[in-house]
Length: 369
Image 1 (cartoon, rainbow, N blue to C red):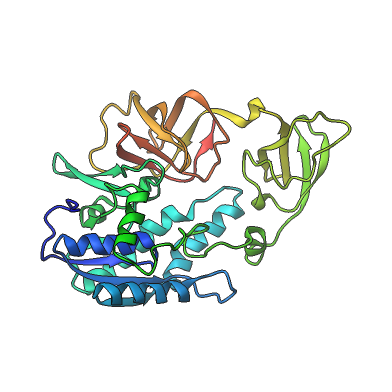
Image 2: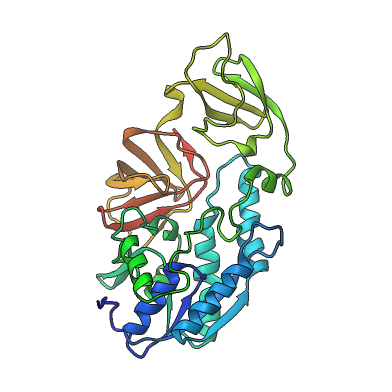
């Protein structure tokens, strides 16, 4: 089966090869499209504590390249990752926000220093195993969603520059995950049944509280209900996010009903975790204000008066109808048609024109209305 990757025959493509099944299948599709493919594997986290799988991933990448007959390069970006991504991650938690390091990792590492290194290797194009697509719209590169709604990763790519996207090929954008697995089995890839990685970008799956406490000292404080009644103690505001239910340790109280408790606010000044029971109105917001707005492709017209767009404030969320209005300071106000649950400051809101097109991005430091 052939897949249309555009005019890439005989072009030198540097593929980010993680050692997983997605990037391995991307290598197959690039080769079958006639590209001259070389692989580049990154190591971005070096702590040898049993949770980071960088050594295993590198060996899997070597096995894939040997099987497919393509050269493999290996580069260490651990310092750049700590400086450009991990320090931001820690700063956001210090400020009581909920960061998404995968977004910054894509912009700064995979499509930043990685892209620069690929060019030094002579690469004309960059390729990754992301489930996303690009298109030329009136001479500008636009980011599109991947066709598999369950795997679409455009949310995590929204901060990547238009220039970088214009030089990138996403071989898996038109495929569903089950099709990717099928190709891997058909070609007998050594990683055909390797499970998808989860957890923090490059850091892997590990006990989050234990990990975070090694970098940020925890500061315990009170848990209070709406109205001020003290219910218990938290172990540090950085460990909690809006809408969280698990791990509060205040259930089964004789002086409260049976409904579960949820985090509805974090008061940094008093170091207080604020909670409420059930589907509280305090969990919902009418909108948000987002700063550091960027647009991929053409900026939509009419922002000064407000325009209707779709948006989502977390990766797995479906598109929500909203109105976006520009402010004089360069930020935007976002008003949702339907009130949104647990919009966490520090997360990203991503705008779309339609169900298939990503058109804009606003950055992390959002405040809830």
